[in-house]
Amino acid sequence: MKLLLGGSPCTHWSIAQTRNRETKPEGSGWELFRNYLIAKDRYGPDYFLYENNKSMAPAIRAQITLELGVEPIMINSALVSAQSRQRLYWTNIPGVELPEDRGIILTDVLDSGLPLREKCYTLKANYGKASAANGLPGLHGNHADHAQRVY
Image 1 (cartoon, helix red, strand yellow):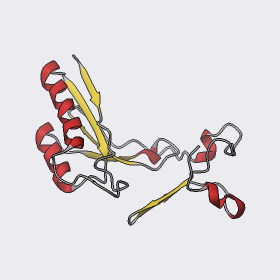
Image 2 (cartoon, rainbow, N blue to C red):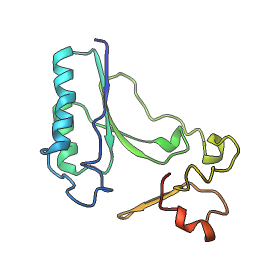
Image 3 (tube, one colour):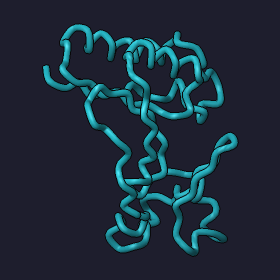
């Protein structure tokens, strides 16, 4: 195998998880990561890339780093997309660097330049001490009830 790509679901480790967030390398989230390690050990890829959320607890991040033997690189998806999403990438692929900021905003990826009301108004997220917004003018007032729902 030349390349193993993966990332276990981040639900268990994310700061968005307000109940039962895992902060130690154990539990359901860790078992999902262990499956990545099993595949890595079994197939012995030349290269690997593992991805997960930046908000994981330091103990989990340190153990993943120890298990994979490389330091993670933090990349915010906002550099290459219309979504602000900080992620950690562990890889042994040579020469991996931060991508250049392409300056993409939400209106660049919408067909009409406006969101379809039937689809979604979740353009702002706030949790913990972190907040991120990528919105359009006029998404307030009567549309405030839509701001917290995903359709």
